[in-house]
Image 1 (cartoon, rainbow over the protein chains, first blue to last red):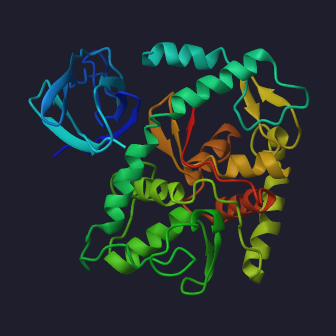
Image 2 (cartoon, chains in turn yellow, red):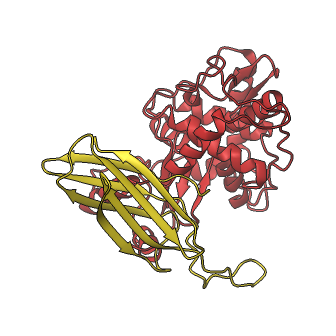
Length: 103
Length: 266
């Protein structure tokens, strides 16, 4: 099981700002290790977020995104107490979902 | 901003935030501080903090115990405030220990885990890095208060002072060569004056920190190890007396300064 994400969501007015810090190596597949071998590509390909079970955000990522990606987005219509769930899927088929409550 | 642009932006910026400025801040410096605030939000050190918290509470090792009874100086299990009062003397080990040495000690005595290879980031040492980040984060904002009541603690301060000014190695460098004056820099890296309260306190509490340039989390032992590497000194052993002494020297000099850890660095 991959390491947990840190999700913070703060409501202000009729929208909430969601900040996510994901723990992931994000290997581009271009890097060479100490012995000169190519380190195989391993990166998050899809990120989705749900507000109280409803899809509100999706993203397709590629090898250009850096290690331990930080993502920030705003969701309209979110208020304190709502649940935000963020899911990522990587090219090896691994995935991780974490939840947070909007404050 | 991708990693490369971030590196470029940091490379063309002025010295680090804990350098003391004699003159008023220029607009460039103000903008850099704003940039630092931005990257501090979502500091990847938070990931190590979370991992460390999980390791603190998880039963592990041959003794199948958690670290929740570990005494970091303020009593068994007390984490908040421990980081700003380390290094200190521990009667059960009969020596002055810093945070990482103490965590290694607790892993050994409570869990039965012998962190044999204490080289940076190897196996069990990864856990010490995460635990150190967790313990440091719990003291964020608290004033530095490294104790000087036990004779060993006082001896460590004096030893640290001697070590700080001790010139050696092929370049005849001491710590003081770079860190004994205000407003100095090496290339584009500011050099804090570690003999003064504010810069010493900020430097002392800046580690553990996440280093953007190599995506690594560096605790204090690693930072001192790297300073010695730059001085072309032989590599110190993990938790050696010299490294603890230098830590005590900086900590005592930085008394009262509010803790920054875990920080984010270039």
